[in-house]
Image 1: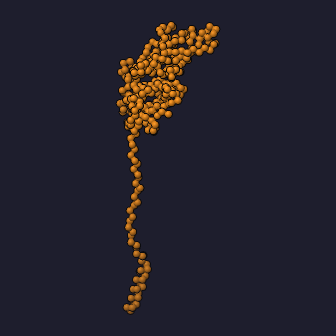
Image 2 (image 1 turned 90 degrees about the vertical axis):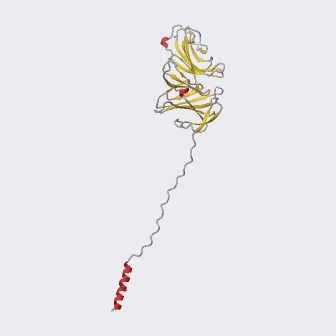
Image 3 (image 1 turned 120 degrees about the vertical axis):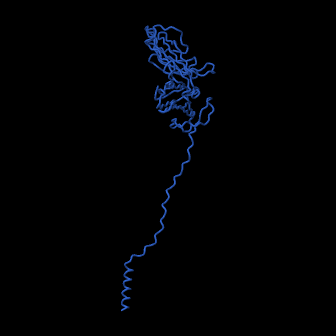
Length: 327
């Protein structure tokens, strides 16, 4: 009896072992999550250090430009940055020019020595009693190096290179022609070379009967040097008392092309621009681009850019000129 009981218990134990699941394997140690790749810290960028032209125009040093001034691609090599303070530029008032309706029937006064008229005889107008001729009127002498001349509604640029005058405006002269208002302006170099250059605006009349220019008013404006012999500037007042200096005027005497958002726009036709007026106000962002030729060699040119920025919370604008290296 006891043997039977033991056999039965053994069978039950064997059946229990067969039905029981195999013992669980020991839990593997939890692996730590893979660490995220550590991003390499980029090398610290150096402050945008550019070449700064010195007043003598020859010595250069490094300078860090205010980060609030726009630079665009001007961080590239081969350019020099010249920051300038607009508030320190001279202030002047530019009077309105004369109008044709006020031109006198007979122009009195001496000839303006810098106004030169070159007559072109085409035969037809000079014969049969017409006594009329086309003339190229330009400015030469009296220190003028470049600028613009306007006779009535016709305007042209002039420049003096190698002591020769180029450019000007075409004017019809003759005994039956009417007299017209005229204005010529530009940079005037000191005759002795010691004094600073000034910007001179001459208002007068063009005597179409005698083909001559007569100056009635000369306005001389002191210029502030931005880049020596290349870029000058002054602040233009809105009234004669200069109670409001509302505009920045850039003068680029040796530019054969200049483009501005505010104007004027000069096509690259070999004639220089005179003055470019930029209204100053909060929220201003203005750029001027120009190509400057060498007065000595017309084959050497340099590009210049002027950027003026004034935020809505800025009391004064930030201005920087950029000059390409000679090519």
